Length: 212
Length: 212
Image (cartoon, rainbow over all chains, first blue to last red; front, side, top):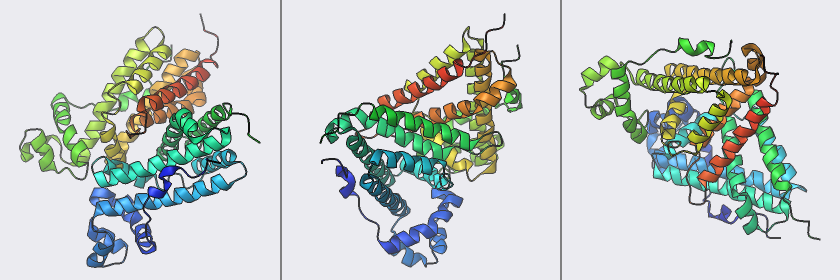
C-alpha cells in the first residue's frame, strides 16, 4: 500500500512538553488581548513565569505563535493517525469531521485562529507555520481519499486536491460562524457538514475497483 | 409586493463623505500593521492629517473600524439595490456572487476582514457593527429568495435563513482561501461558487407558483 502518511508529515518540527504546557497557559491571554495586544509580560504572567524565564522558552511572540500552530499540527496528525488506522478510513473521516463541526469545541479555538490568521498575513514566521499545517492537512486528506478510491497517491492528489482544500476551507468556516440573535448556528453547521458529505460522496463515486 | 428591502436596512447609520475618504486612505496602514499594530499616529499620517485633526473625525480606533464596516455595508446595500431592481433578481444574485468570488478583488479586502474579525471578538463597538452588516446581508438575501420563490418574507425567512447564513459563510470563506504553492485558488473558488449555485437551485425548486 502506498496510501497512509502523507510525505510532508515528517517535516513538521515537534513542540517539547514544557513548551506545550506554557502554550496552554497563555492561550486565554491571546484570545482576550489579541496577538498584538498581549505583551510578553502579559503572556509570562499568564504562564506564572518571570519574563526572563519566559524568553528562554520563546524568544519572540512570533516564535510562540508558531509553536502554537505546530502544537495544533501534532494534534491533527494524531487524529489522522487514528483515521488511517480505522477499518474504513473514509467513514472515520466523515464521522470525525461531523463530530468536530457539530460538537461544542468548534467555536472554542476559533477566536485564536482568527488571531493567527491575521498574524500570518503580517509575520512570515507565523505564515510559514500556518502554511505547513494546511499543507499537512490537505496531504492527509488526499491520503484518505486515495485509500478510499484505491487510487495511487499521485492520481488522488491530481484529482482530489481541490476537494481537500475545499473541505479544509469549509471546516474553518464552520468554526468562524458568528453567534447572533437571529442565527441558528447548529443549522448552519449542519448545512456545512451536509455539504462536506456530498463532496466525500463525489470522491467515493469515482473509486476504482478494489484490488484483491 | 412585500419583497424588496429587508427591514433592518434603514437602521444602518451612514458614513459622511469626508470620513469615507479618510477611511480609504488608512486601509493600507491597517492591512500592513494590523488593527492593534497601527497607532492613531500611523493612521493620521496615512491620511495626510495632523493627529489632532484626525481625532476630530474618529475619536478612537474602534470608532474608525466601525465606520469602515458601515462603509462596506453601504456598498453592499447598493449592490443589493441593483439585484432587487434586476428583471430576475435571483439570476442577478447568482451572477454577482460568482463574479465576486472568481474575480480579482476577492482577496483584496480579505486581510482587512481578518483584522476586523479578530477585532470584533475583543471590541464590542466593532462587534456590533459587524453584527449589523451580517444581519443586513442575510436580510437582503432572504428578500431575494422571497421574490424568487413568490413566498411572503416571513415564510422565506423561516425557510431560508440558514441558506442565507450558509451563503454568507461560504462567500467569506472564498475570500480567505490562502495562497500556497500547491493550492489552485481558482479551482477552490469555482467549487465554492458551484456549491452556492446548488443551494440557490434548492431554494428555487421550492418556489410557490407565480402569482398573476
